[in-house]
Image (tube, rainbow, N blue to C red; front, top):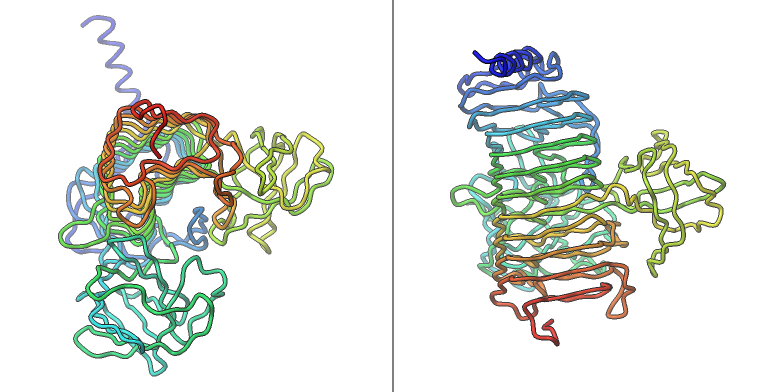
Amino acid sequence: MSRLMNLLLLLSLVLTAEGRTILFCPNGDADRTAEVVRALRGVGSGDRIVFEQGIYHFHPEAAEQLWLYPSNNTGGRKQVVFALRGLKNIVVDGRGSTFVFYGRTFPFAFLHCQNVKVKNLTVTTRYPWAVNFDVKEKDDKGFRVRLGRETDYRIDSRGNISFFLGGDSLQSKAGRISLHALDGFCVNYLMTPDAVGNKDEFPAHFVGVRATDCGNHEVRFSYYGDTHPKSGVLPYRVGQPVVLNLAEKRLSVALFFDSCEHVEVSQLAVNRFGGMAFVAQRCGDVSCRRVRVIPVGEEPVSVTADIFQCINCYGRVNIVECQAGYSLDDAVNVHGDYLVVTAAHGHELQLRAMHLQQENFFPYRPGDRLEFTEPHSRRVVGRARVTELRAGDGKDNYRCTLTVDTLVDGIAEGTLVENVTLCPDITLSGNVFTHFPGIRLSGRGRIRYEHNKVSNSMSALEAYDLAEYWYESGRFSDILIQGNRFDGCNAMGGSAFLSFGVSGWGSDAPKIHGRVVLRRNIFIGARQKYQVEGVESFTDEDAPATGHR
């Protein structure tokens, strides 16, 4: 044997010796949560977690209790099955297995890990989190619907309705429940008499109703005369496909990565889930390849929120050769978060996260570059580098203190703060996206949107700087959109297939964005190909010199 072959064999043995294989085998319908949680406590860097092909069941009771705060979701205590922290070179290989999660179980949480691979598995839930809400009749006093056959519900004497999902429940009196039309982006809320919540802060209108059980999974909802300006009648027509979202609060994420580097998810499917399929925040170099998020059988919905979401990441974000759709929110959402200055003195800034679902998410590291921006004009009024972050003291999880390398006495209250270091290069290539509201991409990195097939959506791309409501940053520098096939990408009520702009502005938007180039794209059924505001340079190489917008 040659010296080279001896060296390669020795290297293979060394690499194998660095980690162990933790192997799990199927065991019928048994709950495997306690076994997995116990085994993962002994996992070290370099270990492989492998499942022989089969079906594995996971219940919340024996899961590990962790406090997690995924941005654009509801943070707090989660019941996590696969909790991995501070590890390197970790592989989770399902070998074609299916993982079934019950109730509010939070499947995967990777925290401060490096070189993570998750592959060859299917994620689903025991019960569907979006149930059919078939409108059978309407009149000026209310409406009658038929709920999905798997739906377990109860109605009390005051007209509140509760839904039960195998030991867990969702009660209308605990807050709003969202309704979604599947043939158009029309969200409405269901509010029963005892429901709590500030209606002024709702992002959509609602119907104030009392529920009455008619039997045979049919329910009559009668208007009780709510006079709030956002209150109205049910907007859906009889026979229109509508679902009721039992996971509107976004309490779980199928795969969650926080402050990790070199994340690879491949050959993975999410058939149904109550929440987002994939979230990476403050992560570097993220790759999703051949991920499939599509419902099976006759179910109408895959996930009840976004499919892929990357927030304040860096390095590269690659979403390649994936098939995804039938979600109740965006197929892809890559952006940063704005925080707002509440006080500035010397080298110290007091900041506040503005949206309820940005609790305890402060995307700043020592050395990161910041830009300070006026909220409406979007004029950059200062720059600095972070030297220290101090999170809230537990009394207010929306506030933090930053120490920076520059005097900030002139920075006004209300100024937006953007981390311009945590802006990845983004590639969407070779994907098939269908039946979803939108795709949202932003940031200073290079954005490549190429060779995708996109159909039946509210829009194929929104590249916006959002400084209201969601407080999502930010401005983009360089977007190339080429070789895509866009078909019916305003079918859900959108205007243009592609939209570029600045929230809070009309046609006179400040030109805060950089360059957009369109090349060799196919637009089918487009009344308006694109809407462009706030962009320095826009080129459609296939359009006549006058352009077509």
